[in-house]
Image (cartoon, rainbow, N blue to C red):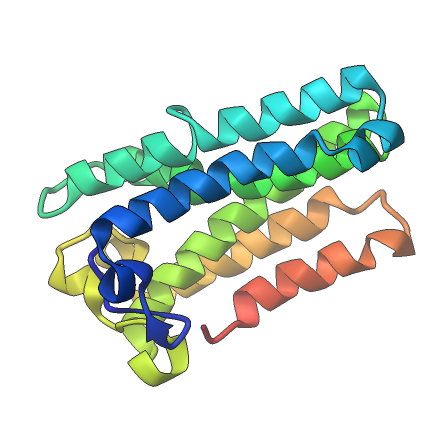
Length: 208
């Protein structure tokens, strides 16, 4: 939808195979996700109630109130001035919803209680926000070679971004705050949550 020529340093699907094949690939992969979630091995490892809950969380994060809706809002906002609240909504839906659902699905699968589920949800929301803020920063500061995608595309397309609202330094501070919030959400977790803490720090430090 952004019509970019590169992703992860390689030509994008629609450039190589055409727009129709790219759409079909997305549709196929989305369907495959639900096939995987209902695989017999998963059904044996989780209760029916937990599995339905996980599928519901993922479907909601993908659909009109999640990634698809956020992407639609993002496209509609191109070239327009929008309030900061709408920018937050776009990022929360387009990027944060699916990241949060991934964390929540693991929490359900592990049988966490309501308090820990809420803490992990807060962690997921915070790293989702941090990821998108850093992504906005990298578009301004990174190179096409380092990013593996076209640098400066957000500015060229007049997209609403955190640097456009707040400048680079304030945006970097907001990314740090989001990571700090993610780490704070894990304060009551033991060393088994260390991979989650490392992931939050990586999101801030990543260069692509």
